[in-house]
Image (cartoon, rainbow, N blue to C red; front, side):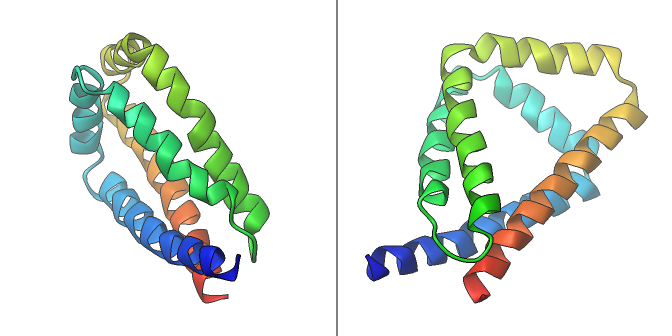
Length: 132
C-alpha cells in the first residue's frame, strides 16, 4: 500500500504543476483561453474531456496524507463532473456560447481570473502535499 501512496504523491506533484501552469495561463491570456474553451466545447471529441476528468480525478480520491480532505474534494468534483460532460456535451457548448454572447470582455476576464486562481490554489495544495 505504501508503494501506491508514493505513486499517488508523484501524481499529485505532476497534476499540481500542470494545474499551476494552466492557472497562470488563465491569468495571463484570459480571453484567448476562454476562446480555446469555447472552441473545444464545440469539438466532437469534447466528451473525451469528461472521460479524462474521471480518470484524472480518481487517483486524487485515494490519496492519504496532508491536505487529503481538500484533495479528495477536488478529485470528487472532477470525477462527478466528468459524466455530465460525457452525457451532455451540447449543454456545455451552449453555456460557452451564451457566456460569449452575454458577457463583455471585462466579465470574461474576471471569470477566467477566478478560474485561474482556483486552479493555482488547487495545484499549489497538490504540490505542497507532495513535499509534506
